[in-house]
Length: 401
Image (cartoon, rainbow, N blue to C red; front, top):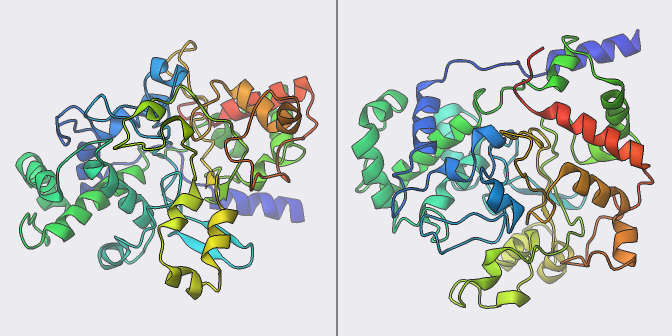
């Protein structure tokens, strides 16, 4: 009876499968997400780095096969990390410190710097919740990032949106007209709120994977997929950081990844990357370093020690659509820097990392703070690695039962 009750409760908590009609705010956000004119020069939309056919991440097989970092609107400029998926991130809470686990959680971007603080008051006023505030904070960033959409200021973005989408804006925000003057700050936040609303919509998060249908007894897993699910929830320890339904717990980890030397960021001029080849990605620790001492005092933490303890940690990504690709030959990329080029490679790394380090096959970019408890020496056989990969492929959206 207890097992049946647990299963019934899980069924009740599962998201709805499929897509619903977009609301006016979501519809506006969709148009902004796919508009390549909202960059300087034009040509760089959000979808240029977060395309639906590949699970809302990087859509170029050739870029993925190399440095995995995408050029911005100015095609000679590159950032320092691969684009994460824009889907299934809406549940990420505002960035915060959990004193119980003594760890940071929430926010957006690989390093958490889109905390949700910038738009949470507006989200509360509009929707009565701060859900999605980190997504909205994140959406404000690329427009003005010189390595991404490269717009000179908020007013340029505001004027472009007003020129192209005034009717859709009025439908989405009927009591808050576009104001590119005194109300520019609020209008710019509303642009981001609309994009975040689309990124939270069922069109971006449809929950249409084989795994979702399996939970509803509308699909059957193969023997290999079933074994993989058992490994995922047991011996392989994946569910410790990647729990369903989003398959992320929104925390931060240093996996011990090596550098990706093909990342073009290492060759950027000193004005962009003054350290050149010596640059080491500080991850969460780098963002924490930018915060004032008072932030840490309020948490009863010491800044230098906290920064040091979080160097090399990056946001735990969703595993949904991990292997979604337009063709079998298309290269996808894994890890915050895209150093691994297949599911098989990254699963082997998770399983055998400690031995790979000991044998000199890999050198961790940041050797401190490596997660030693949930990966590195899992003891999976070759068959178990293959079974785990088989299960992970059941998380791709678009399955037809």
